[in-house]
Structures are given as structure tokens and as C-alpha cells.
Image (cartoon, rainbow, N blue to C red; front, side):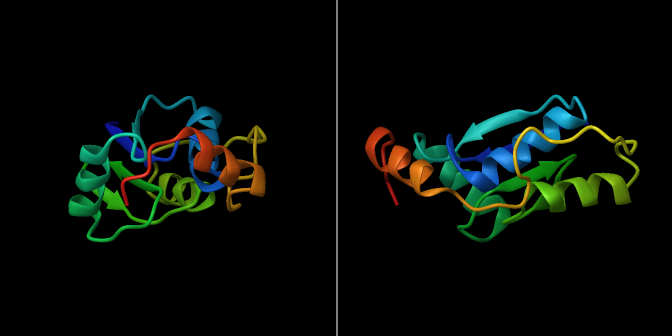
Amino acid sequence: MNIRCYLKPSCGWSNGVRAIMAKYALTYQDVDIINNPANYAEMVEKSGQRLSPCVEVDGVMLPDISGAEVEQYLLANGLVVPNDQAPSVPINAPCTDAEHEKMRIKTVRFF
């Protein structure tokens, strides 16, 4: 499988997607949309919208998606086998106040 995940470095939704990738031991590209304007522009062009995370699986774009929705897509399409491993973080949760503060202080904002 070829998986590109357009994610923020620190974000509840993005971390939920990462947790699903880890749960199923999937190899994927973690594409930083905060510190690289070209990555963000690519995500917007491919997804047709500005919200993240977006996950592209074998050419199919899943726009503005949570980890829970990514897992549902992977299972429904037979791309992974169900397992009982618990994700390391919530897979359907927004950024915490601490994550928002970290992004405000440590990242370059271009949008």
C-alpha cells in the first residue's frame, strides 16, 4: 500500500491518524503541512479543501479525516485485518489546549 498522510506535527486529529498507522504497522509518509507550504498546497490541490488531516491510500484521497475514519476505511476495504490492539492515543479527538500552544510557539504559520 502507498499511504501519504498530510498531518500537523502536533495535533489531536493528526496523532489519531498516526496511532492507526502504528496499530496496523503500516508504512506511510508523514507529510508536514505546517512547516512546509508546498506540502500544504499539495494537500489542498489533491483534496479540494483546506482541512486536515488528509490521507491518501493508493491514490484515493480521504479528506478531513480522523484516525477512527481512516481505520474504518482500511477495514471496510480489506486493506487491514482487524486486531484488538489499543491505539496509543485517542483516534477521534481534536487538539488539546497544550497542542495548540505548542503549535503557536514552535511552528511556522503560512495560512
